[in-house]
Amino acid sequence: MCGRFSITLEAGEVQLQLALGAMPKDWRPRFNVAPSQRVPVVIDADRRDVLWMKWGLVPFWAKSAEIRNRLINARAETVSEKPAFRTSFKQRRCLIPADGFYEWLKPGGRNIPSIPYYFHEKEHAAFTFAGIWDEWKDDTGSVLQSCSIITCAANEIVFPIHNRMPVILNEETRWDWLQKTDKIELESLLLPAKKDFLSSYAVSRTVNNPAVDSEVCLLPEHQQDRLF
Image: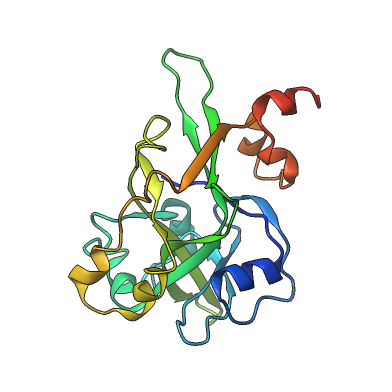
């Protein structure tokens, strides 16, 4: 599962590092992106413009937008088959720019709180998650565009903390994700990142609160304890 991520770089840095098109004018660095919030999304491999969508997929056929609370992630193993995701997999794939994500270690024993860990590219560079998106209309005709992050089995770096991780597409594969149409070729892209791609460290449980969106979320746990 991927339930929190970051994109802490300024718009120009993200645009340059990922070779993107136009960036939103209201862009700001984010340190604790949570489900139901706006996330940056790229859906066109030619223009490469960055759009805002809500995190939590609402399929076009859904009766209510509340379904998004349950569809923040899609499993790589079943995304092409599940009714909620298969149309988006075929027709509406996307990239979600990020520069890190959080996973929680669950220690043994009852009443012991989980420990959040932050995973980032070793040089703190931007990368892209594989995603899917859809467009839903309510009874008044109002349109909601929303997305899910695709997850896969964890690699050697993430596995000691959690058995799943978001699919990270590198510069060789990210545009194929938007442009390819063959099911087998697309599924072949949904693999764990190489083990030498990521670094990680424990952070404070401050990140558990989605209302906190500042640099404090990224400080190592022992440094944060000194602040309070």
